Length: 480
Image (cartoon, rainbow, N blue to C red; front, side, top):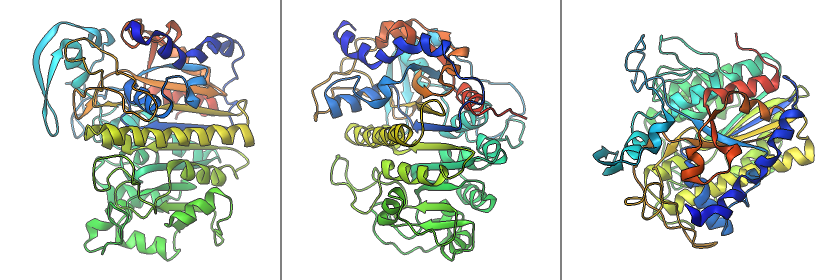
């Protein structure tokens, strides 16, 4: 652990300001705008791997200077795929169990391979994890639920999400992602469903409600994963956009939304030059059936698809739309394919996707500093859960061995311990009006210093439901 002392401490240098920030804390309702940015499936070493590759060091990303930094627990209510109507088999979380370094002979059977647990703490992290649906529900509603649920309770009832509170208050709502816009994380802020797999129902609700001012992502029915035109045959091709009937209405301009598809349209929107044709709402469906970049052929980084917008461009465009509302807005931005790369244990594309997300964070920060201020806008940067349990190259023998920096432009040395989600503690970074509210429910966890070498102010964690409460508090909204 001593090898990373100076570099890792730099990541959390901004925490020295947190006490002063708390004393100068804005009151509830001070924030006009909240931007929540989610790098799906990004454990602490996902963030670090991208920083090493991009900068050759830690502490260089824009969120590294945010004054509030701590960690988040992400476990679901239970791991059922449907409502259980009881607390039976509820998942409990004990952070101490993550740090149990006793050797273990257990195996974790992943999606494509089996992984030796090697240590009791690893085994604990590998099991009883949340899926993205339950995690999105926690982040968007402040309520724990079963895996698979989109804004849906364990009692089989819809849960009111922050998008509804925001829209009902007269503010603008924006939701965008690098994967299909009806996928689990964006769906949690747009719709309600017993199952995340009911994509057509989820997308149709999002369009027909007209609640969001901006929706963006992939899932185009007439393009393949390589961004090439494809014949949209059966109804399944249209599932991510609400079914063929919904898509045809979008294309014909018979919904509240202006449909945009081409990369140039996304660029024009970001530059404030897109003709909205009399519409005030945007639904951007990039010309890709799955992801903006990750799911293209091959496994290496580079050689990206030329006809796809990047997440930073989409973020700029979305901000141009939602910021027109004089009452303010809530915007959720997801780097959704970070999770896909972790499932695939694909380190080059994990770094590529995380870097794309980091550039989107930069775009949001630049918008605040140019068009708003930190006194009226809150940005929270986090993830919904870990994935892949990426650790150092010797982590099979040495407990929580750190990943090894090889300099800018070179992948760090690392080892995967699963191809699925994890129960590990994950980072959250916050800056702006109401950021200090995150600290009000924080629990101490000194082993974060021991094993991840973060300074004492960062050795705390909150539950993911507190992200929702922080956003609501900042905006002056009350749950009912």
